[in-house]
Length: 588
Image (cartoon, rainbow, N blue to C red; front, side, top):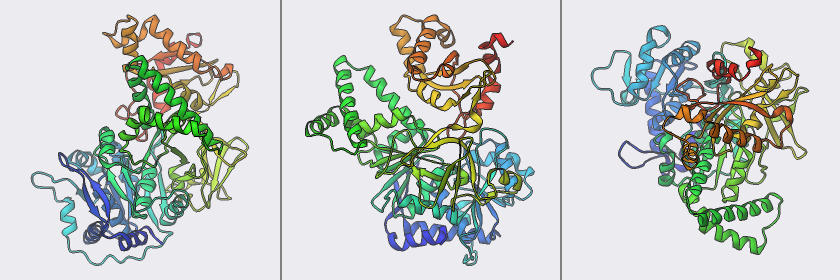
């Protein structure tokens, strides 16, 4: 079996059904059937053949989620090429590094903006022969630039290339929070073993519709929002952008949706803000509904059936409190899937109280990606589920999570030394994550090994649980703990500006100048109170003693976050070195 043979199987079974859906600017969603997808893949693969693409050549892909992304992926695989996907948010220099390191022969770009990035570093990549552009380009194209539609019209030869399951399907460059990205080589067998394991736990069928908005260049969306649905006969609808997800959910009414925790946190914050702006009666009804939902959730988690009275109360709460939330997701959602970063347990519990299940999983690019996952028949909030079929997991003496099985990558491209550092002689992949496995087999992640803060008294602090707790405050948006080799913890905090300004206005604190407002005694005391009240269950050495409020968010544009919205700790710590030093005057 290969990814192409699985696609061909889907085409045979679901030919006339919708495979993809996209929304042209100013238009409405348009469907593409499995048969039409097949025809486009065939045409594009022949075009690649005509351009001289052969087995094992690298075809890079710099694009947002859209039908051409899927067509390029499958078309490249059909000629035996290796796809090299890139995040559309990368800079020209980052694109150049990946193109050079991978030795890519072709790059497909979505827009003129992405084309400009490639043009800027074109002379630095001697292996690059052709640039394919999805959007129409005005004027005459340079000789090495060709339109996607033109490629599909080229008269290439047949594309019956012998591809085996052990062949490399893709090289995915890790976004990484430190150092240059490394190219992870994943084979057809890596993906197929993983998608079979996931499909055995989560039933995705031809009745499902998925809204795809996480970057397809990330392995989480690549497997869960691309291969799994298309090999199950489901329909994948592409969101217009990350800014239109809420609108697109209502339009598409997805039954399943993948996201990183940030989406769920944002939805949760908006709901609470709307409640706070409502009347006291509405607030009381909301909190009553959440209380009822929490009782139902608790009973379900204990394997019990809610009482008749509780079920009646739940029906009332659904109509009075949660109906709007469910309608905002389109009204057909079976469950959310969360990955890419830690999902705060309180967020999962809130949504389940509202009748929406979020299933959290765990994995890395190097593991194709799923190592463990919660699923509809077996889940536990605060964990990342149980290891999936065929995957071994064990905890090393230092607490690091190790995994072994058919999901583990072939290695890092052109980097045997880095491969040897993470895959030991017995085939165990060292994840770099710290965690435990409980008595029921559920995996719980504590933190990244490299993120552990070692205080000057020798105490080890995992920042993730503390940060996850503090961002539940309605006044805290982002937070990064510091304190390595210091006496105690401190924090860089980005407040929730809207909530903070509303509070300040109610408490007669001037809001004209944001930076000045953040320095006021009232705001400082508010945040200090939030920290103290939310860390009561943490040890004394885990308390945040000092903090600095920042007047702008951490962002991808500032290179402070990865494309999956993880904070680049080293970058931020270096950038805010002066602010951190001011929190530790005794060390100056």
